Length: 76
Image (cartoon, rainbow, N blue to C red):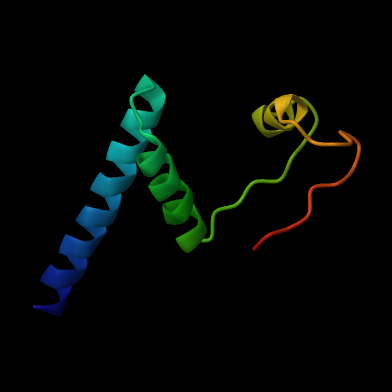
């Protein structure tokens, strides 16, 4: 019985991840869905570190920071 519940929870987790990814990749994700995806990643211990020429660095370059060379402060 416990194994059945665990399998169900694993399937829900996997399905949620796949659905969020699909909506993000197609560009159909709403702001609420993007927020849910961010929370999903954080809740699962997933974070990103900026490296040279990474998508995260490219995003940081276009965001309106006062000083682009100033490190981003951690909020978590």
